[in-house]
Image 1 (cartoon, rainbow, N blue to C red):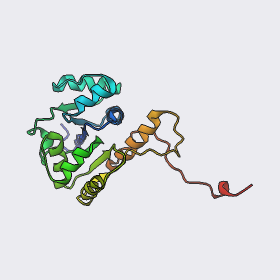
Image 2 (spheres, helix red, strand yellow):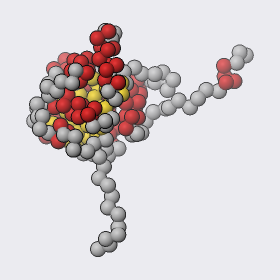
Image 3 (cartoon, rainbow, N blue to C red):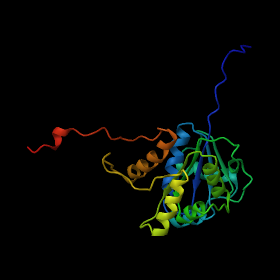
Image 4 (cartoon, one colour):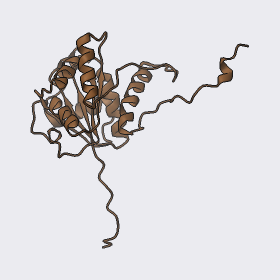
Length: 219
C-alpha cells in the first residue's frame, strides 16, 4: 500500500431547499444540473411544497424520503446520476440541521416570503428553516431566490435583514441578453446565477461577453 498517495477529497453536498412559492421548475432544473455534474444534493422541501406540486402540476409528492427522491429524479429527468438524499420537512434532527455537517452551503429556490420572514426573525419551525439558519450562524453561503411580485415594504425589509446577515438575494428575474428562445432558457438563467455563488458552473449558459462599441455607432 502506498501511504504517500493522496486520498481524494469527498465532494461536499449542496443543500437544496424548496418552499411553497410558485415556480417549482426552478428547483427541478437546479436539481437536474447538479446531479448531472455529480454534485451531491441534500434536499428538503417545506410542508407547503406538497400543495404547490398539486396546484402547478397536479402531482402528489411522496413524503417517504426514498420515494420522494425517486419523484424528484423523475421530474428532473435524472434517474441514475449523482447522489440525492431527501429529508422530511419535520426532521429537525437531520444532518443538515447541524453546523458540524459540512456542505457547500444552501440555496432556497423558490423561496417564499413566509420563509424569508421567518428567517429574518430567527425562527426555525421546520428543517428547511433550521438548515438555513445554520448557514447564517456558520457564515456559510446561503442563497435565496424569492419568487414574488410585487415586493411589499415588509418583504423588502426582511430581505434587507437577511442580506445584512450574510445571505445572498437572487430574485427570480431573468435577463434577455443571452437571447432566450424557451421558458427553460429563462429559468436556467436564474438557476445559473444562483449557483454562481457556490462557484458551480454546471448550467449551460451564454454569458455576457461584452459589447462592441462600434456596434452602437449610427450607420
